[in-house]
Length: 243
Image 1 (tube, one colour):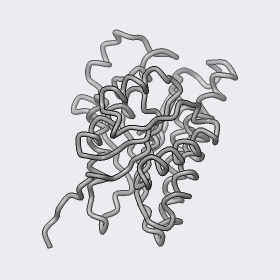
Image 2: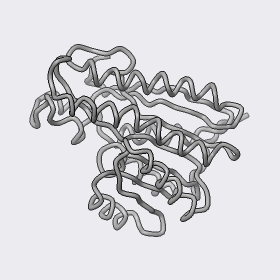
Image 3: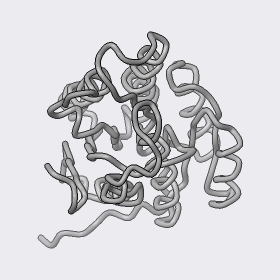
Image 4: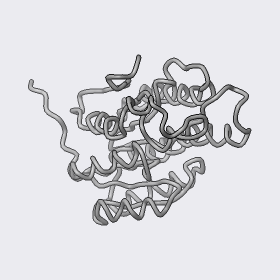
């Protein structure tokens, strides 16, 4: 049997964290493959710009905070009402904060936990409710930090590790329903996410990290796998990054 990638033309994909970085690049690459996308992020003006870029026939969006379950519910409802179904979810919303365990405010830590892990749970629950009878794909964007942790990123790594464990559990839970679950775990990526909260624009090491399009390509390729294939985890670094 020869291996063939699966066409994504006409499929419907919900994407969280779609206003920048990996989420935005996933939307661009999916629409280029003929998919239609339902997008959410907090910054409405960015979603409007992305809709104009990709075309109104291919995009529907909902502005909101992913830590609120109502946002995920509204996203899935928009996808199904506009395009008739939901085939996949890419959960890419995330916040980084870097420093010791005592660095950062309580509000910063709560926002990161609520966005990175709790928001992932809400988006998966909403998507599964729409895909349970038809099957589909869930891709969760985690981090290599979630696989092994590291100094000065303990809370961040904890949220990413929680995503990895959650993804593994729901992958086993949902197999009989035909829903595949993939966790994508990149090392550092050159995004707005990578700057601030302990990191500075212009840091030399940022020249050698992954680009958002690199990670987006891996996500698209995971969705293109034949239905007989399950890719449960992808860990990735740039050629210059140590592993």
